[in-house]
Length: 212
Image 1 (tube, rainbow, N blue to C red):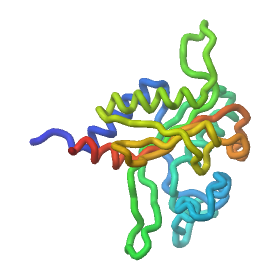
Image 2 (image 1 turned 45 degrees about the vertical axis):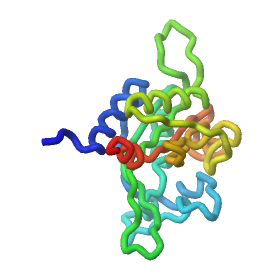
Image 3 (image 1 turned 90 degrees about the horizontal axis):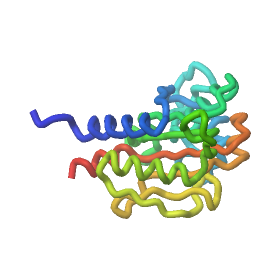
């Protein structure tokens, strides 16, 4: 007995909130290529810039274990936009793999990632605003309500995001993620011309909060 574990309750609540906000769930491989990581223009001291290598990869595009979810989401946007879908909103829940010096295996936190471009969903007869930083602030508020947590966004420069149009997400004062607009040069590296909003949060941290 005892009901669902905290992780499963978190995942179900988050999925329902994201779908309700007009996002579609995707499932991508745990592997990425070096070029995709370099496109994010992360600083040299960022662990995500140095993902773990895969032994005997099937291809250069699958040579590394993903360190953020963002490359797979931006690739999903690219595929949809090239198929003439102007308004695309995607999310993914899955593990990322971070180097853990001295440990035999990497850290594997569970993350929620999302990315969107085009206009906010709404009735076709109404003028719909474009996605922007305010849109993702509202999404974080929706996630907080869905998981019964108190999430706070503190504006500031974050690697891989547009300066002044992003912020870190705090849970009980602890940084658990970042949301905001993707820099135009990063979006352009995936062939995306309009504004792109994105974010990545630790589902492991949200689940731990639910267990308290």
